[in-house]
Length: 396
Image (cartoon, rainbow, N blue to C red; front, top):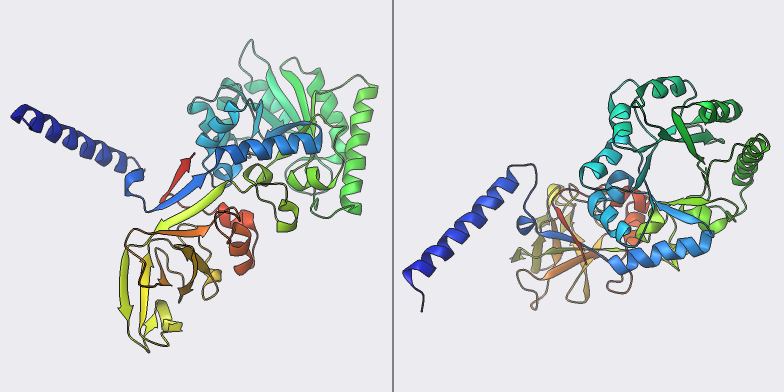
């Protein structure tokens, strides 16, 4: 029997829960319990993929957590990787590295994109974050930023031909000498990035590897040996022998995805994306569905509304082609994909709150991220990195 005291305690607890949710919702975060889209992320699959790349590359592996860990959640992904004893994490920007530090990550983190005129480098050095030199003129500038009594862990980013951020190849030898001579620096790494490693035996990639190895040999001849030397990305590990290096940077492969499904046979996609049915209704024959009535009902149709759209992850270019899975069966998405919702064909067995699977790992759902990307004529990485903040990521 409930006493007045118990009733009051229950009421107070409910008030506190509501209050906490309100606080959470006013801090730029939608409470997870208010989200109707869930990305289930398989921790066992993360471990499987990481160990596969260590075996494949015959080097240590640095998972790359740029772009919010390819949409998987940078902070939680870092925690999952540290639990399986990952030593090194890579991110693109200094801001991403600082975010990890501010959320308690105490391990090695390397970043390689920054504005030299902003205070971000100085902040990163104070947080013991590894910095990649992407321009030889930055060397004396960064030297002056190193805190007194400390040495900055520095990696030289060599441009072997991709012509993006990085020290030009013809200036890399002298840059390496300058870094190694600096009393303010610990020269811990040398890196480059492959142009088209998804192509096996590419003359372009082979030339890059040749140049990078030549630079390494030149430096060894003058007794400069940075311990972490890496050029291979996900497909670089899959298609080339990189076992003579000490590290590989694996981005998409960590998450079980590549740019080409044919390369995916040893990997497990770690994310399964689901939403819910929030409304069921019958639309009469001859009615248009969605913006511009691109789909006209051929008969009286039972349809379901799903609260997910192109603001969340679905590429609008997949409109009129995309399907989802409900209760084990494939359903068409009817009409144009909206910003916040899609309408799907339904049947009599469907109920409010039934799961709607957008994509899975190929076993728990036939449709994968590759299928969604193909429908939109793009790559998996572009789709997954556009994941919105209305999606609740659930590591399990």
